[in-house]
Image (cartoon, rainbow, N blue to C red; front, side, top):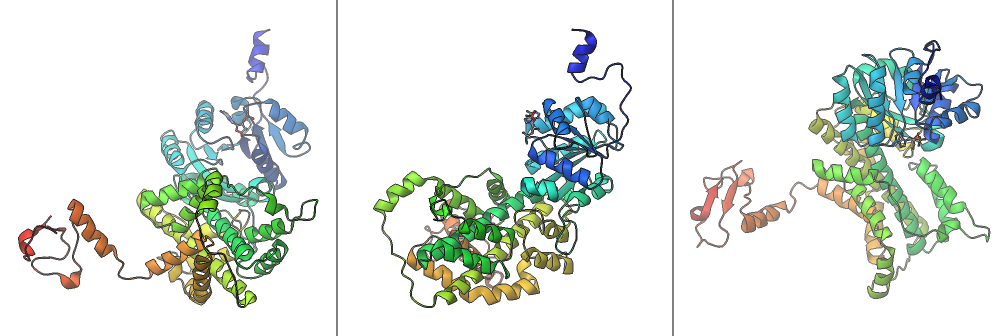
Amino acid sequence: MSNQAVARLAGINVGSPAPHPSADFGLIGLAVMGQNLILNGADKGFTVCAYNRTTSKVDRFLDNEAKGKSIVGAHSVEEFCAKLKKPRRIMLLVMAGKPVDDFIDALLPHLEKGDIIIDGGNSHFPDSNRRTKALAEKGISFVGSGVSGGEEGARYGPSLMPGGNEAAWPHIKDIFQSIAAKSDDGEPCCDWVGDEGAGHFIKMVHNGIEYGDMQLICEAYDIMKRGLGMPVSEIAEVFAQWNNGVLDSFLIEITRDVLRYNDDDGTPLVEKILDQAGQKGTGKWTAINSLDLGMPVTLIGEAVFARCLSAIKPDRIRASKLLGGPTPKFTGDKQAFIKDLEQALYASKIISYAQGFMLIQEAAKEYGWKLNKPSIALMWRGGCIIRSVFLKDITNAYRTNPNLENLLFDGFFNKAIHNAQDGWRNVVSKVALWGIPAPAFSTALSFYDGYRTESLPANLLQAQRDYFGAHTFRIKPEYANNNFPEGKDIHVNWTGRGGNVSASTYIA
Ligand code: 2AM
């Protein structure tokens, strides 16, 4: 083979003039998400350059889905970079982890200061923190962008959550906001999120919240099925009704449709599906991060654990034969209970989002990020899995007061949760008596009651810690005196004193 042929196989242009830089942005990674984002961009009037590690996929794409559209292709990283207008805007939609770093390394020799690399994959936010810093040192702007909405969203309007080097934003804003979903008010579901890995962080929390929303819906279904003894077809109609009210959302809508879907034998398919949940890890990341940051994001945690419990089906089968409990028996007004259940779901959802925003707020503090809070809820209003009418109220809350301490302190949500309380408590107490697990409903209520309690029993806990480990405690200001001064770490010898507190007390 000639040298030229070898070079051509390696994707190097030999003897032909450098390609004219015609593409508004480039995208690497031609799996379905990548292809759909390119097609979406072309529909919005942008010229897009496509590249993929396996270059045969570029040709296949150009000859099929991309035919006749403003889409060009490249067979090498070099050719790809040469086809992009400057500053170059390059989006990676490849597998998270090493492939992202490998592509960044391959791109760097062909880039110039001011060029922009966007990672639209499912990267963990610490990786995006690292990449933002490392690329800034080379004069390259890195953007880590959450992309949500699946294949359909990518094609017709995803929710986009970009964060990283803010210098990039003016150069990508038009493209991002054009291809993003629009809220029902016509606003693009995309805005600048914040520094470093903030975009991927917000996507992670979005996924955690998605876990929580799904778990709440599953608990409501289980309570109607086993607690109220309702057939699936009837439960579907309850979800249909809920979808016209405060719970109006994509997940309630698809639940309605799933429950209405019958197998060939005319029975609901959902009842035949094995009750073992899978997970890809973003809910777990959110739960781990909440533990790392010391934030009580309990509902997402319970949603992750509920999937874990479902996954140990063999254990559950054995336990179902050995461990007794009550048999659910509903008496009373079924319609009234269904109304209570709607309130329980609504209130628990408010708690879940309040917890999610507590985590986001703490992350901003911990990582030193400036976050665009009103826009976070806006970005979730359309295109993504948790899209809902409810997010409009959250957007309003943070637009009214961007420094809102807690979502529950907003007038609208304060009133909403207050009004939902009676129904919520009724449901949680009844299902406990019936022996139907409702970990998400229950933890939401426990959180609410804990959060609104001025004095928790952690006084006793501190005493226990000091007893067995001399971990010290502090005294309540109103009880401070010479023995127990305010604001000091105090240790008491809990066993070795004869009534004389001061003799066995020291101040650490
Ligand atoms: P491929 O088509 O060559 O496999 C989703 O899997 C996308 O990530 C695809 O575009 C895929 O390229 C790319 N990808 C997966 N693993 C990769 C790797 N190790 N290096 C580069 N690209 C990779």
